[in-house]
Image (tube, rainbow, N blue to C red):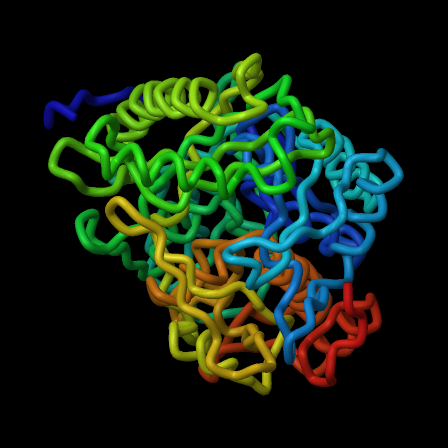
Length: 493
């Protein structure tokens, strides 16, 4: 940015609509949040900047669910349930779901899916639950309600790093609170600028955009020796399965190590992930690592760095593919069939909420009275040139996720929950609980809790960190089939 500014004339922004619950971001947390809120009887709108749902699983080309399972006393058990069961059932009916496979040195299970089938299954789950979807719309700011704590006179419009002008908003009763209250989210689309008003909001943006604009405290790890590095996924087609053998991913890793030791090649990171997709002729490749000129991680909230990451990522993808094609049996006639629409961001902002989940909570398999589900994924730290894994110390293999990590700290913003990788977690804990399974958990809990808060006419939190009846929230989640980690899991895959 040049540092220069211009003054824009004031304008009247049309209201697109008014909803009980507005969800920003259509990744795994947003899909579940919108579906759960709609099933709670709330008029719900899910806002997504692309023309499809799925987040990193689709736009990021991930094509694999991580974190659905835990390695519990030596057995691989699916621990993410509830609405996730319905989504997986829809994928299976579309013939878009592989059987679980072992990953990370055979230490835990993951599950590959067909990206196109996931888009359709997610559409069906959300709209079938009664929520509306608004595609091709990007949230760019919030309007805080006039008269809420910390807001005087006309409501303040906040977006990005700036506070732009002011706008008079009539205000609609939603939740009772002494904290700040969001009245509307500002969106931009091909139809122009508009406002979406809501009584409750769920920030599933991944970057904590809504929460940050509304004044919720947040933190971000430093780009060097801190924030996790992004990757750009790509897919390889026309693999000769017979020639490739039973485990070509190990062959690729060995060949890369030998080439680096011989000094003929250098690669952006160690521990490549090259895995078959729904059709074994097609393989997903996850082996890029995107950094700035000074070696720091690309920051997903900086548009110039995002641009740099896309350019560097595609070049890294081409270089890596060329090596794999030329050196790996079975890949001689293969080609790149797809490069993901965007680089995969693992970490940016994380809110500082009512409780911050810690790495020790993950590794120690911690329990919480306000559990809303569990996380069984290990700490997966994408550091410079490598990926480091740290495994749970307890053979149970999972930690509970407390409701408080989706709740902004008391006295900040009353009518927003934050679900997904931008929830209240330390850098180390987020390295584990950012994956799909825990995001499903947080989203379903956020949508259910938002419906409860609106029904009771209370804030999303109070001085003790919450204003809803968490015991009732847990009952509703378990009635829907969610697993909260309070009894031993039953199903072994």
